[in-house]
Image (cartoon, rainbow, N blue to C red; front, side, top):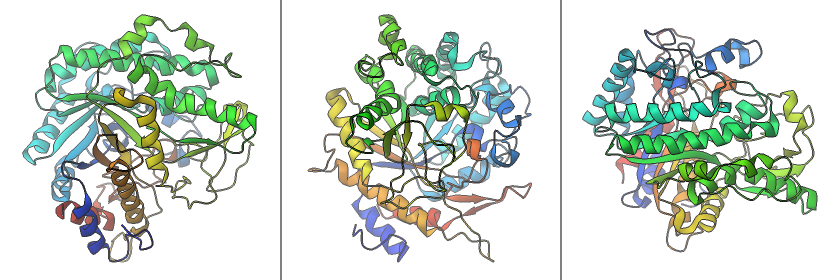
Length: 489
């Protein structure tokens, strides 16, 4: 695609042109997560998630918003599957809400919760859409005291995975065990931006390890249930560079890369944690305490590895300053909010001033997606299974016109440029030609509750009116663009 001609110009033609270029067999679809869209907070049998009390705590969520109704996906399931069917995608990635299915995090599964997902799967399969189900997408049951700091939570995830595999194992094509454990460990347990709001800094490393152990036990649980679908996990990855060539900045960038990327991919794909030797060895001493049996449990054979890409990271040594300029994103999952713990970190992210930013302040840098894929190829080689891009997308301040339409040209450009970057990276002669890219999933089908940002950030291909109790849906121009692209393959 000619980068001098944005995809938003003559969007129908550009969609057809890109559709013609997609490799045969590359799967394209959309993604959501249960807590962000489902609503139904008071449905029969649903237990509380760690996010429920977090959203009720003053100052945690922008404008005091919550996800008790969200996009009301439960009430509008038929409409949403119709949107998926008419879009024409191959795959739909959703998440099971663990507290809806097992309110205490253990014991028998809730029949009312099972009935909802039973309907969803029946409708997806009847529509010719391949289901990809995530077992744990941030919203673990509140009843699991200590959350991911408690080793027992990993065991509970393994048991839950086995039960879910026994119920739905004949109808799900792909299973994701845990989503973005790096984001959960950092934002939820290290700096307190997300639930459960812990500010432990490097003492949050057990929350990272227990998620990975839970992943391994969940793989074992699914395989013991003899599920027919493929099994993988998904993590948010970011290519990292130092802000300068100063030794302190290089050390800080190495640390950030370890915490964000290698801490999660190395044990899953290689069966070992990265070597914490160096200037930050004391902060990472927990990694020396991991039992070999845990690493063996984590290092399960996988059918695919999921990668969420939002942005590259430029790292500088030293703590964050308390005030930052508007639009300068700090990491892949923050919202511009601060906590005291952030200012005690030994590194900070600095902006990519050479790139425009999205509505959430992240740099729009599709050229770093091939860099990321090439890093995965170089680091893991034959240990890297086929890859899904399990979430790419951007928030923009969408505006409806007098007719209620949303002409989101910036999102079309963003998605087109990232699709092209991914496809060219893995093509013969590309930067990551050795990577088997199996599929690309767009975040997100619907506007949704974006965690600490509430409803201020819209990622959806479909606009949801959160001010209207009936939560009407309006497909944006980006939905029409992707629909045209998929029809042109």
